[in-house]
Length: 82
Image (cartoon, rainbow, N blue to C red):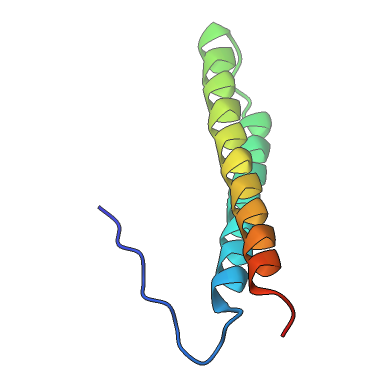
């Protein structure tokens, strides 16, 4: 089970920056997954099934990244200008 770290004091933008950083990392993971699956020389029905599973996982990473970006945007709007 993962724990959510406590908010850092002194920097009100830290949560937003953290959300954006995690979003960027998830997008990079999705890109690497897709590139690795495409680079395989493996052919056949099993390879196709594997690539579909990898694409599904990459799409889930991208969807999560979209959610984190949206959360950061909403948090920025809620906090207002500084």
